[in-house]
Structure formats: structure tokens, C-alpha cells
Image (cartoon, rainbow, N blue to C red; front, side):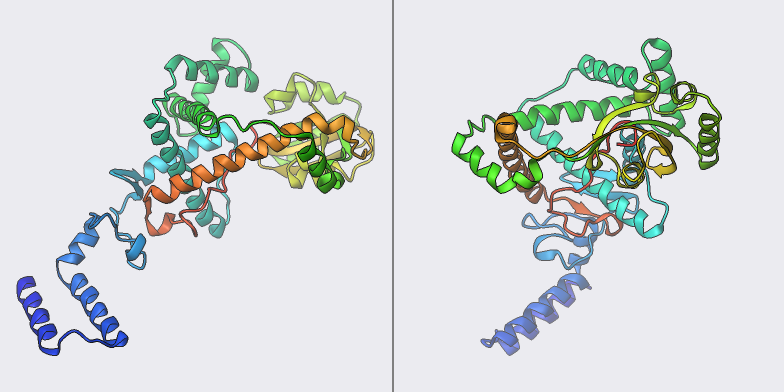
Length: 378
């Protein structure tokens, strides 16, 4: 049947000749595409196989739906990343970085695409690191995990075993986390190799940058804050009542706070500016008077009760004081631009094909998802 159909199309084209007018050529081109879809081309597209280096869903065939197996989120080269693998990646992001799935359906759809893009880019970078013979030893990754556990839970085998059990409870595993740490450490080495030496910044360049940025270079208002994180709003209210009844903030923090990085310090977060805090938390913390409690306020880590211990007013920038740090900032910006340019080219050349439910709005753009801070409401 397919052979017969091709003969019919060939005879028809031969009879009418090849149109010289642009409209005629477009019509014949459309017929050719239709013939492709009606014949073996359909099965080629459905199989996801390449022709002339192009896949369905990309390049000249971007208008064609990308047919992938039902359980596949995206394809990178010969690798098919399944939905289960991507779900494991989401679980790992939640455990290590506090990245949680939104509750609203429209938020879930965007989150799914962000996670797919994030994972796809990490695979691109992992391959690039391999091409440069960059590797991370098992011991280096395990040492990094041990430091992470010590900062978050505590030191010793007991704390480590507790963390491993929590991974199982959250649907992930020690192996998945160690592989992620290996990937992150390899990417850090890769970025150093890509960026290289950005060179020195001249005094003239620093002065010009100071003039342009003076308004934003001053020290903003900062606040010394103590904080307690709990699971529920009701529990946060109980914490407030207990502190207001006379129990010291530090004692309650050491007893109930879920934030391992501040719990043993009596809840002290440090002295922070508004932009260093998560927006929902910052709005409340920076509208509270010195010495006052605030909360309950919810952020991605849980329900928070805080106290403003000290308020430091803003301070204008002085060139002599920030010259050195501004020069370093300019070097960092140059390095970051070099890295982003290189990464953008790698992503564009990667040929990643996403399933419809996982395709980002702009597959070739740099990813917008970044791991949140590891602990606390910051």
C-alpha cells in the first residue's frame, strides 16, 4: 500500500510538472509533508528516529509533536529519561534544597517543566565534564554529604543514619543524593575550566562602575533576627504563647525548631538585609519593631516565629570602603557572563526533545530553577 501511494504521488507530480510560482512550490511542499505523514514517515516520526540529524519536535520539524514512549519525559541523545527518574530527581531536590511541588494545578505543570529543564541541563553539563575528563571520587562526594548532614542534623554515625532514613521516608536514597553531589562538584570544576582567568579590573573600570551603581551599593537596612521553624500554624501559635508567657526564645528554639543550622544557636539567624530573606518572611520581619515577636509566617521551610533583636539603619556607599569588593564583583560578573554564554551554546546544541507535558516554553533558554538555600527561611 505504501509503495502504491508513493507511485500515485510521483505520477501526479510528473503530470503537472514542478510549479515555478512560489504558491505552487508551497503547495507541493505541503503535499510532500502530507505524503510523509501518510506513509512510512509517520512511523519514522513516531519512533523518534533521526533523519538528516533532525528529530520530530525540533528544528525544521518543530511543528510536529514529539512522539516519545508514554513514560518518557525527555530524550537527550540516546538517553531516554523516564518520568520515574524525573520524580526521583524531584524527591532529591526536596530533600537537599527544600524545593517543593506547588499545590495548585497550574503551578504543578510549570514546576514539572522546570524540573525537567533543570535535570536536562545537569545531564548536558555532566557530559561536558566527562569530555574534559573531570570526575569526582566517591570519597569526595561522601565527605561532602557528611558535612551537609553535620550542618543540618549533627555530627556522628547516629545523625548520618537518621538522615539516610529520612531519604528513604521521602522516596529517595543515599545513592541518588551522592550522585547529585558528584554532579554538582563536577559542575563546579567544569565552570572553573570554562571561565578560566577573567583577568584584572582596572581602577578606571571600578570608578566608572561605582558612579553607575552608587545608589545600589550602599548598605541597606539590616536586622538581627532570631527564628524558630515548626511544621504547623497551630504549633507556631503555641510557640508564641510559650515565649510570651516567659520562656526564653533561645530555650524554645533549642527545644522545638526544625532548622538545624540555627537551633543550637538559640534560633539566631544573624544580621540580614530584606533581600536576603524569602519575600513572605521579609515583609513581616521588616515591619516589626525592635524587640518584638512576629509570626506565624509561612515559607517553603515551614511555619516561622521570629524576633527582631536589633535594627541597623542603611548606610551610603563610600568608594574607598567598597573599591576592593566592587572590583571582585565586576570580575565575578565577567566570569558569570562567560559561563552563561558557554552554557547557552551547549543547551542549544544539545538537541533535547521533551514530551509535551514537560516541554519548557523556550527549551534552549538558560534554566530558571535554582536550588533554594539549604536551611532556614533565607
